View: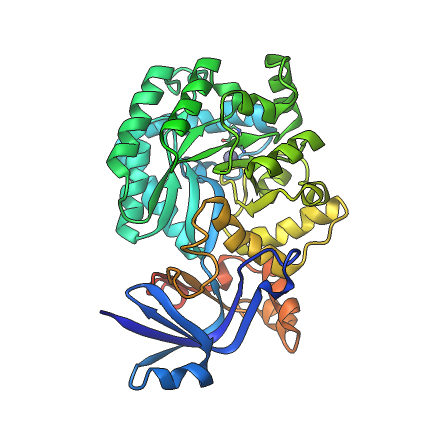
Length: 430
Ligand code: GUN
Ligand code: ZN
């Protein structure tokens, strides 16, 4: 049995503070007690320490928040961040599909998976829902590297039988390879499987039906895809599926809309889709840096909130421009501003942690640093840069958190802990 205790300033937001103002938990001088990687107690140091006499206490310097949960990211695209010039469909053709073809080589996939997970840890991200490529071994490469780091990663082979030459599977191979991967990886480490059709435009009707069948046969799997991201994409979906009421309705036709579905973007949704998302329990992974970068638009928080749609946050690397979920929380604020909604910094933290964890159906395991959860956490440094230090001096907690979201990034991640073990220490890697 291994017992650890960490003393420091803790902040977590376990539920959406719009619904529950008591969801914000702040322990200015807190103690976290961890047994075999699981939080067994959390409270004021003064109240809790006497219950653990003789236990060595580690002091953590900074603001400690739950490890970030990235609800939408592509690992094969990390080397294509900052590809200049196009919006979504042309960007895919020119930059992304060629990059993903290189993953036919397992050794390349393994190299990138390693760099990718290390970059997540550098940015304080401990859990993620990840797009690999169409190649089944791209999932193996990612899961093996995640297992080695004990990270909570959900992924699944991309289905895209209408993809370009060299990147297209078939309904049959999609089914067989997905089933083999689900069987092989079930119950291993902290991994989970997501049935992952790329988007409506890259799968035939027959393959979208395979995705629906896989979900029906594997109720523990998530559904992970893109939805209503960019105007030209949305027009192409409407042209191909004239009989469906809207983009979400295409997925509904094949049984892909349910409580375990995660749709990236949802920038341009009719009210009917929002009502259907709420009714089904499906969630949206909002990806503000990607939406800015590809010129897709800005997520409409007011519309989603009016319908009670479940929300999380993603970086969407490589259309996204930052691995930092801290910075992505600040960009969510800026996207909100563009459409008249002012996102509270505690809500932005919720979206980047427990909100995304709920979308991934791991909210009981991570995202809030509550007893019973896995001890994944991040130590933030509000003096990471001279400007941050100046801007956070003598201000309220809300102002400090907001300054970290607007001015912070990987530089503000002092340490990242996975189940109580330090997995990244900025100051040891300078
Ligand atoms: N839609 C279909 N594929 C992709 C992708 O790789 N990135 C983004 N941002 N949108 C997509
Ligand atoms: Zn994406």
